[in-house]
Amino acid sequence: MGPRWLAVIPLALAPMALAQSPSVQLWTSLTSGIKYKLTVGDHRLAAEKIFPPEYQSQLDHGAYVRCEYSQQEEAWAGKCSSKLPYAGDKNRRKWCTFQFTSKITSFTPTRIEGESEVWNGNDVDVDKCELQKTHMQHFVWVRKADGEKP
Image (tube, rainbow, N blue to C red):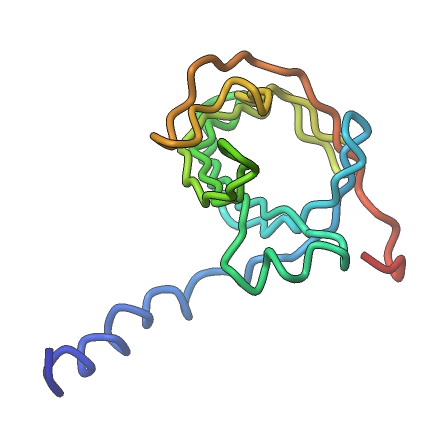
């Protein structure tokens, strides 16, 4: 990967510059209290969990929870991923990355509803970084008022 590879980057990014500028919005889950940053574009949206300040050390180690949604008729189908630490045997911490699904069934300017695949901590095989069991959970997000801090 030499100079030729770098020359491709501006060409790959050029179509994105022509597209409508996406808007960034802050939303809060009424279900969990978690705050999300949504980037809303044309028939696509991305959601990223905003970690509270007390989790800064996890962020410094690469923690994230992100979803990419694409509009499909009345719903938005989402593919999500997370990288988070889990406590294993003898309180040994291990970082695991998981892929999971989410779906937005209602999206208005002030409210989002849907369901997301979730799991309990004891449903994780930490040594193998495998999910043993998941279930779908309904969620409701509300948009933060303009000027309100994240």
